[in-house]
Image (cartoon, rainbow over all chains, first blue to last red; front, side, top):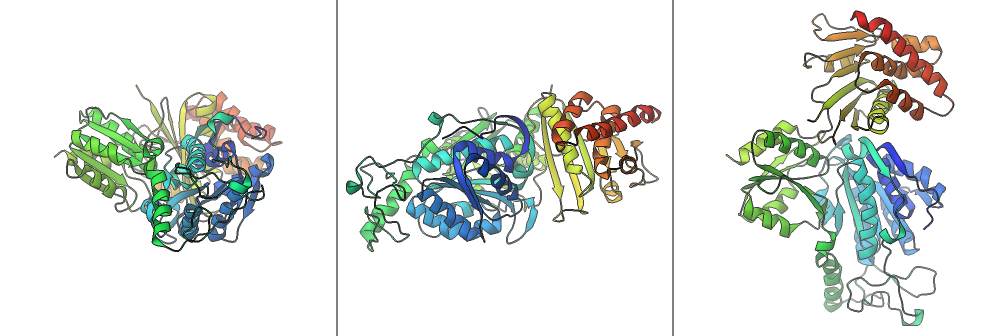
Length: 383
Length: 183
């Protein structure tokens, strides 16, 4: 990939803009989208920047078409992205499943606002976390990353493209209005080729290529449209040739692999960060903007002598089950603040499995938790 | 020891509230080597709705991004005054444009006034009112070094308008030097 047009240096910019720059540094050269607050700045910056790096920006008629367009672009060889918020994310769900089924690398950014429905367009929410996991129909696994700063909007967008190419799966960036609109110093950089992951490519001659043959690996090599390999892709259950195979055995083979390629590679995919965790009697588990409020609260708790710690999720999906199980054995309680009425708390509770108490601290959206509220929940958890 | 310093700018959409916050945040984090976080809140309207920018400056990464205990509050609309000029720490400095904001009879915080809207109009370009305010801020507060603010103004305004914006900044700075001592 040419490094021409890649912006480098320190800038004071918002998370949405940093996300767009991360995409460009990761090699994204196609964006299709439909503007929606608070994700519009991603599309806006892509529309300005992609022509400067030889890429293509298309404003589509809606989010259904946007999702389809990036799948098509990916099959033509481009690294492709779209961005949206709640209502648009809902419209993308069907074709997100198509992307999973066709094993199409692409990145979808959801800058979450408060819902349901139109909700509070200009205010924060974290209500789409379970939708990210279960929003499309059928059995599948997905990867979802949650940035907590503009710098992470840049860095994790690069990670998202890498994971998406490696595992041939749509990767979701579950940002939120505060992180998307907040401005901080962001260091933009060109990514050296050895840091960029490219999708597995066929090594056999075209006459021997079967589009979904994996040779024991879980991720099949991907031929691109127009380069001489014959392939057929369909949302129907398909065999190694990519042709519809309407039976339970083919379904079992295909769906099991689609799930296993993520599940069995959890340790490569899962990312989290911890602070003050070693002697923690109560662990606050948070993600996105809420993790920053939680860090503030845990710091306050520590200065009162309360042994509190922070587990910040960077991947919400796959969920770090094993790690939470281990933490549950050596801590007394989990506090889960999130800007919804309980989503990730169910995962934490499931993994804590009665070994540690789990308390939800919900917020309906339109703002973030007050640090004092999290501090009080920490105190309460130890009572 | 961590040092957290906070600024809130509040007015209505179209007054350059968010750009002002951006210039302060950039000055602190890019030109003064600190950490700064800018958040904004606004309604669905592009112009005329209430609009607030909050800047948190620190010598370490900012975790909670919102203003808790503001050192300076700049208020450019009466509605914003009612919302934000109460419940402040005792030492907070409140700066208003007296043509847009009438302080209440029970105002108990340190108060400075500068008629930035009028001054900008006199200069021929109403849009520089926010830059005049930043010059004033540099004169009356050490929140961000004046030099860093100047650099930040220059790199944030459109190409070809730098000289004019710098003039506006200096006008505000001069006004601050002349009037602030009395407050």
